[in-house]
Length: 229
Ligand code: ATP
Ligand code: MG
Image (cartoon, rainbow, N blue to C red; front, side):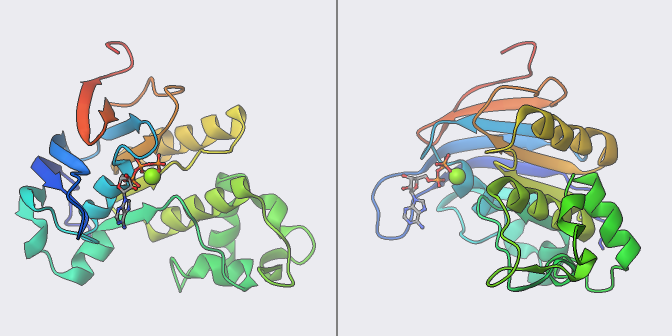
């Protein structure tokens, strides 16, 4: 991957509304993350958190304002370079009909079995290996996996993908406190160099975040860190 990408994000005065809708989903949002910084984005359902992530991956472009990565406007990034630079764990992690190995190798086709096993252990999914190991079948006719396991699978893929920028859309939703804490410490202990945007509903376990931003109806209404908020 792009060793040359540092992962600095600047969102400057960005406003956005979905096509055909008059309602503004993001209003003059400004955020800056230095390379390696971790930002938690909080706010009620529908306030625009996931939309903001989608602008960072250029699923949509803002009608106003500018987003830059490492100083270069997103629209000037080549699609492939942007895909290599940014990894997303979306709110809905897809599991495909296939083995555990197939499902992980989507993120890194040449990953070895020992690499895959190590990643599963890191995210606390070693239980998936019970029975048939990496050949355990998932999806239709296979092992059913829970919502929490699905989310951890998304994080396992992101670890394998190893992009300098990691966008996590409520990765700890539906996980118990202990697992939530495990995931958060993965971010801080194993990814010190990665720039992370972490969307969550809960102001718990965010002591180590460099920034915490609270959104409401498309506006950033508070910003600070755990101590100041
Ligand atoms: P949640 O916490 O429930 O995930 P969110 O903060 O991520 O909410 P968004 O998904 O960004 O919120 O949605 C913000 C607003 O934009 C909502 O009013 C939503 O209905 C609307 N919206 C989201 N996606 C689309 C779309 N593809 N087309 C039109 N409107 C959309
Ligand atoms: Mg959302």
